[in-house]
Image 1 (cartoon, rainbow, N blue to C red):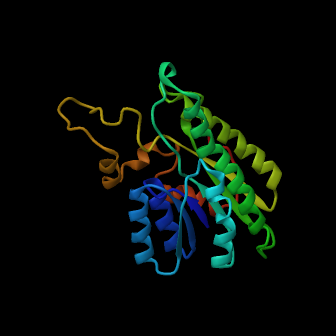
Image 2: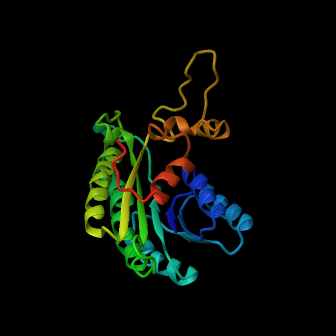
Image 3: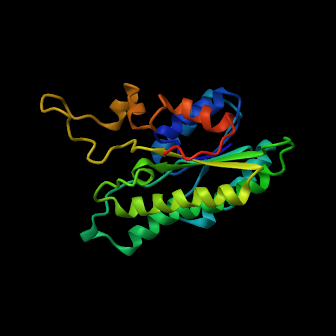
Amino acid sequence: FLITGIRRIGLYIAEYLLQNGYNLGIIYRSEVSERNLKKLQNKFPNKVLGFKADLSKYEEYKEIPRKTFEYFGNLYGFLHIASPFYETPLNNVAPEDLKYFFASIVESAYFLSIESSKFMLLNKTELVKGHIILFGDSAIARQKPYKNFSAYLISKGALHSLRSILAHELAPEILVNEIALGPVIPPNYERPIKKTQRKKTWEDYLKEKKYKIYLCDGFSSANEILQYFLFDLVIIDRM
């Protein structure tokens, strides 16, 4: 598998895939992700290949699917999880903001999916030869965008369309799905629920395993989502 992003929810997904016997090519950028990568490499020797790349720059990631295939000898899936996430209020947004979000979220998903699909088609399985899973946002799927994140949500909206396009283009050999999560870091996430409670960060939610609060309706964990989309061989718009 090739996966982008192991900073938060991607780390749990990566561990799940590795525990189930898969090899992983991982695209990362931040220092936090690099530390997570090293932990995975120590825990799962010879099963994790890391690539440091900026997903807003095509030249930095275009060869990664090929390198992953050549290293492991196969490529069965691509999961696009990584995404920038910060506020872009309408009265303080620049063209560069939208270009950065679009390139990081949509363009990278588009070109990495295309390149990955070429190697998935080489798999010798009879029916389904590969999986592509794009991680969207429930605000788009439900048509209930939250304020001050316009550049991010516009790009996630385009990703939502890309899922449908790729599903038609690559069927039936490659299944393409979207998981429309709620935000792992909720907008204004440091605001306390009650005045008596201390402020919570996203680390608190992960440590308490309450990250499931922000996942798709009907699922209790990231692992359950993967089980549903990867191994039940479905094409479905969950929202």
